Length: 216
Picture (cartoon, rainbow, N blue to C red):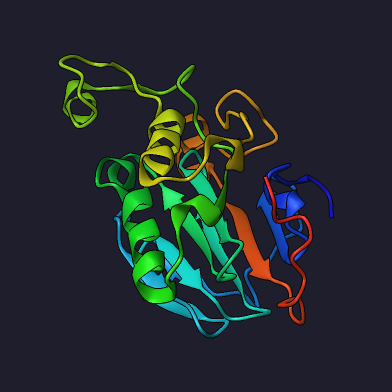
């Protein structure tokens, strides 16, 4: 598949399939669970390949079911738990990030599936990085700044994972900026002409007994 990016961290887990889409990626959400994304911190449970409802994160433990999000500057974040075999797909824009979407998703996975953060692997995909993300004073204040300036959403979400107990060596950051790199759609660069990239994660069926590749 052209221009589909993978995380070296998640690629260590042979029982999952994942990908971060780009402008020319041949990824379709047909046959995947998806969302009506509303820039929130709402996390929903997916059990069927359909639009689940309004929210910005999906979790599942259903084998064979791909869960997906769409982005064009916001960060796609994919999570996988090696013990309980639960996964998550997150759409993290500034509103969701400021509202702690990553923390809420990890907490929900713990409540639903009994996961422990030290067993989680995470990947942060392409998004608008601090080099290009200038915000006004109102948004900046949500991130502890007292004036307009640059906000590092990538770092904020990564630190949220670390604070929840996900080991740093199990967090992968692709380090790709959607505004800098024309391989990606960027809403800030292209405005209403911008399309959306699809990122997804899926538990491969019939791999429950496979524990290879799960150690840091």
